[in-house]
Amino acid sequence: MNVAEKANVVVDGVGMDFAVKGGTFTALNDIALTLPRGSFTTLLGPSGCGKSTLLRIVADVIQPTRGTVDLFGMTASEARMNGLFGFVFQDPVLLPWRSALGNIELPLEAQHVPKAERRERAMAVLELVGLDGFEHLLPAKLSGGMARRVAIARALVVEPSILFLDEPFNGLDELRRRQMNVELQRIWSATGTTSLLVTHNVADAVFLSDTVIVMGRNPGHIIERREIDLPRPRSIDNSLSPDYIAHERALTALLSDDYKTRDD
Amino acid sequence: MRALPRPVLPAIYFVLLFAVWQVAGQALAGPGAVLIPPTTIIETMGTRWYALLLNAGITLAEAGQGFLIGSISAIVLTVVVDRFRVVGEGFFRLALVIYSIPVIAIAAPLTATLGLGTESKIAVAALSAYFPVLVNLTGALRTLDPRIDELGRVLAMGYTRKLVSLRAPAVLPALFSSFKIAGPAAFIGAIIAEWMGAESGLGVMIIQAMFNFNVPLLWTVLVVATALNGLIVFLFDVLGKLAAPWHDSSKAIA
Image (cartoon, rainbow over all chains, first blue to last red; front, side):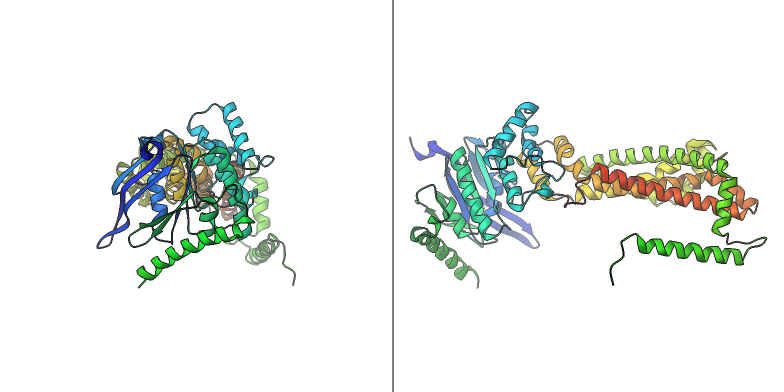
């Protein structure tokens, strides 16, 4: 079997132009990447490198100007319409009039899943993200960490073929963020869902990923692809060890080079 | 100094206002007086309570029917404007133009066309009510958090599903805010239409009191109408809180 057949997601020659006053602005150019089935891949880069745009292109939220996206032999649009996507936004984006459980059931309603099955599946994911007992709380009563767990549960409830994570732990304090990383790793291991994370945080990228794709700016492009061969499960304690630091150092160096060469 | 509870200060102002009003009204008392003291108004309410109740009921019924017609049309029009941007934009402009006609100017031809019955009053009330609902609701839908749209897209929701599950509940507070404007507008519209010719209603009472130089009755109707207006606002405030209890405790989208 060759690599292409095993591959889940293949992005090829993708570029994105935006119309601006007096011409076009190229946000992304010549992006090619492959996400193997069941892997955890991170797009790491500074603000403005187009990593969120790339994520949205793969998730068919926006259409690229150039290039193709192939998910499991389908176009991005077909995959989305088939309900294969789970998406976690930068902020939880929960519906404040629905309980935690109601928010998690939302994607199943869109897929016309019967009520009893909806409830059952939502409760199962709720348990997976460690929120059992809090199912009837409204979002206003949830802490930041809990709200993000609900957002992750809502993405996972459809048993997605691919999970998109757009800086999901933005705005959490340092310790809470590390704890959520551990949680996310546990959930990912339990479900085996192919995952694509966007972050500017080097430590998060190393901790969570099988592969880190470092991106640079002007226009957004891929600088390097780095495999993170650290054993799993990874823990907060381990994450301070030299192996982790070596990866963080290498990634930081790549990012710094980009800043030096592009910020004149 | 310790802060006073919130309703205390306005209450003090009201008491002061009434006291000054009472004193000034009594000082200027006499035939042809224009400032009627509150005690006289209360007295008039006592003697004319049946006529006031009857006419207020008639005006409220007209305003209520007009409000229903106006706000339901506005909600339907809002969805049309939202769903079909190009066609909808034309409707929206037309709605703006219609609203630019002063109520008092449109009340006359409507009364001439629809007659002196309740139909003309309901029509004017409806015309007064639809606009605040249309503008507020359209605005609320357009300024919704764009991530709501992204969520709907990622979940492969169609237009209707997205409207019902995500967008409509999110604009519920805005809808009830618009009712707080549209309700009194319908009420005032009904009164104005009654001036143009009607058999009964608060507007008719005002006209009759004016022609008979019955200044105390004029003031009494004014106070009753103001109180009813306040009551309408209060009613929609309460209904809005019941319909969207989550609204005050959080942002539109957490």
